[in-house]
Amino acid sequence: MKKFFQFNERQTSFRQETLAGVTTFLSMAYILVVNPIILSQSGMDKGALFTATALSAIVGTLLIGLLANYPIGIAPSMGLNSFFTFSVCIGMGIDWEVALTGVFVAGVIFMVLSLLKIREKIINVIPQDLKHAIAAGIGFFIAFIGLQNSGIIVSNPDTFVSIGELASPMTGLAVAGFVITVLMLVRGIHGAIFIGMVITTIIGMAGGLISLPKSIVGQVPSLEPTFGVVFNHLGDIFTPQVLTVIFTFLFVAFFDTAGALIAVASQAGLMKDNKIPNAGRALLADSTSGVVGAVLGTSTTASFVESSAGIAVGGRTGFTSVVISVCFFIALFFSPILGVITPEVTAPALIIVGALMATEMSKINWTRMEIVIPSFITILMMPLTFSIATGIALGFILYPLALISQKRFKEVHPIMYVLCILFICYFLFV
Image (cartoon, rainbow, N blue to C red; front, top):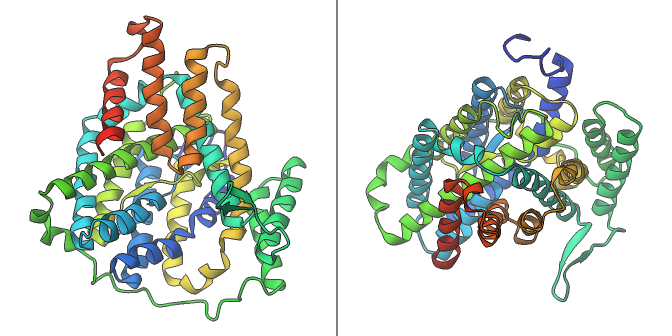
């Protein structure tokens, strides 16, 4: 096992990888609760969604761990499940069965692009400074999610956002967890992020803020309401409206995954010569998970940026992903206790991991304006638009234009020109 996962080469251990896997699972376990809540508003069965969410996470995460040896968790994307429900099903009036078929078709196209190594090629031609900007931008993005989940930052009609009620019990719990985790982290305590989540949960239950689970073991809900429905609606996707939806799934999922992969590889120190080792296998695992997820009955899956929480405590190999998959499998039978993993418990981890990822900014060449502006916009727009893909797209538009203005045409890879044009068309017409 140590040889297969390259423990010695990546300077890790069984204990370190296991701790990382459990930490990442706890950071992303909320998807088991939140994904069914969001998608069920489209008319889908909530019980089937819970099982589909867990199984798609198990398959995708196990594949990326075994095929690519990456410490990444894969599960239904939070942004795309909202798009699926509120924009496609409710906004456009498309039945969830047809929308799910669109997810399936997008996943199949992803698999083809991955097998042809087109996705890998695109990721590898991204300039190194932009890769650092993407990693840093995702850091700000997930820190913002953590601040929002904790109630430290709330919406404000006058200033868009403002500080929340820090005296609120649940927000106070998140603040306490954040402070405890930071103090352990700066003292060099191994596993500080994981230990911080455990301590925060115990404080919450002791203070009556987090309800004790009424039971430990629960029955696994049936997949029958959603399993395989995509095969009955393949003929319903050939309309301009649904084809536009498929393209949007492709666009957002492609660059959400690319961004997460770049960020995780950078944070784990796996990037070599501006390239991600085994990127093709990682992307194939991700796209396969999307197809499996659609067949099971859930929206598009993606590599989770919360994987950075596990990497922060030492995750370096695919064994971390194996542990994450095992945890999701166990969660299928222990769903009642998932209620103790509240957003306030995981928020401190997301904020701290965001800070660690933001250190990628130091690797950007801030002396050259043609790099500064695209990098800055990439970083800034991820949290402001609440979209990793949008931040990447804007950076990809500005970078070629900046070098064109300096008459440095040959320094830009042809693929970057193609992406620049595609992104401009996307913003104008889609």
